Picture 1: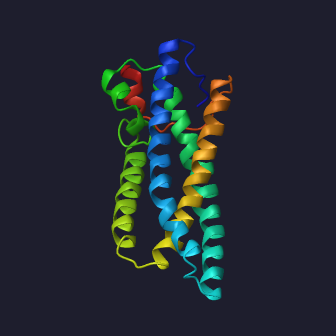
Picture 2: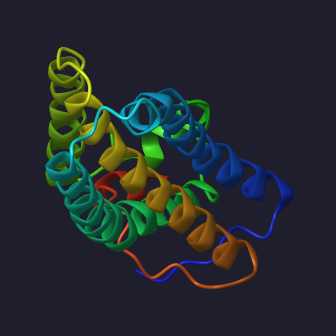
Length: 182
């Protein structure tokens, strides 16, 4: 589905609200996790073997979470849903734009299942990782920071492209029946 960003100021502001809300969530997570990830490096609690594990984990998370998860799927979909939203005048969609951009509602059944499952899984993993002692928690959080940082960068890149006039070609995964009613 090829779609241009709305040319109206209101449409662009709605797009900005949806995408920037997601950016704020990701940035806040990096802000909270980065000091925890840095702690084992700063205090010297990493053995040579743990340094190797940390480095391998960073590369793995850069590829799996950053490249495959964020760059190839999440970020282009957030932007596509933001472009779709820029044409909407549904007050609930606009008010909850960041959640809509993340696919948590007004999405195909499959997209809602995937989005809510990922969100639930992330919450469970966060609770579990918080129980780990340093340096293990720092190692895990370091990989998460790298993945989230990659995601923030690509969300900014995809958003900027669309704001500069590029066409969004990624499927926004919106329900077709609901789209016909709008």
